[in-house]
Image (cartoon, rainbow, N blue to C red; front, side, top):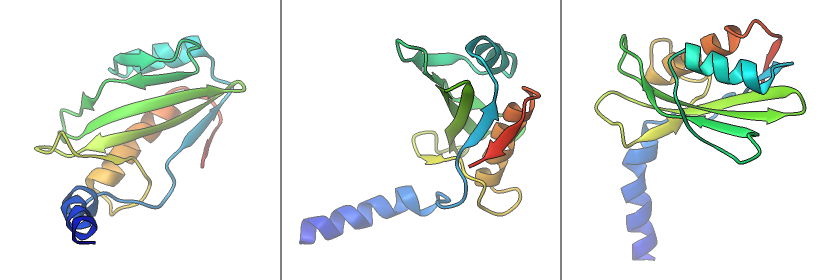
Length: 131
């Protein structure tokens, strides 16, 4: 029981600053693989890995020059649509990542990373939905 308590206490600093809850996915309708890859590269993201089927693409972390926040985007192609999600890291804490969500206060790293992901989604000029 002590070990479980120590593990929980040790994990608190890692998860304590992340904003959980809120929406985490942006669905972009009618976006193909070629458009997705071009859009990611045009936005300054580089591809880290993808599945053999190219149905999931993960980018390297991109640091924002203005805020220092690092964002990693995960794009899943599904039935002619793309589902965008991701993770962010705060300046000075690159090893600690949190899911990108639409929660948090304006100007917080959580909302700033959400805005970056939403701007990327809007750059495709396709209908989108926040899930």
